[in-house]
Length: 311
Image (cartoon, rainbow, N blue to C red; front, side, top):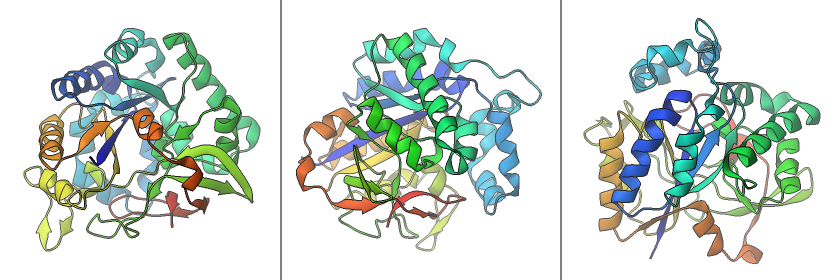
């Protein structure tokens, strides 16, 4: 039976307080597994407005209704309102683990990491990851087992730190996609990462499907992708009956786009898929047979800027 690995990025305070409990309920109803990756420091979402100068940013914002999904209050955090401490949402986070879902690290400060990590040095990188690691351990009473990079942004020191933590698997990058969301390389999947000639120990599980915000509002195969047909667009990409990693967001699928996510859960089951966590996926991998890939960067359709990608 092929698998859909559900990787849930939790970026904001509101997403943690509202989106996460909604997703726990929805996943439990469908008996689906998933991995929740938490932001653990301050919510500086308002700082992301600096990305307005990046190519493609306004196009993405206009397509995905950022204000509608994130809310005005969240977009003011760190600018006109004090940045709330996401790591203070202990009850909500522990409830995820108590419900039987895997939990891991997304980041310490989502905006700071996404906008800066690629050019930062080892000391800065390790401070960010050490802070997230310590906060996670304090909340959950055990060390995190996995990581999923904010905005799919990393640097060589970050990959070294995952190995130092002893993490066996992570999902920090993307598989390359065609304009219609299909895989450029149909065989893309888990791999061993090589950085500057050094083979990393932590196995990488790249996201292989487009995210909802990358598809909404775009024209694909002559038809605009809307909330009424986007679930079918993604399900069509899954008719190849192979394992996929799907990244969703507590702020989107956990709130306004929850009905679409429920359509996906039902559709995947009808196609013969099981929805599982990253831990379950890793347990079934033959890690000795995985290909070795270098660290590379590329842009993807529907998303602005470069990110870690398997080429």
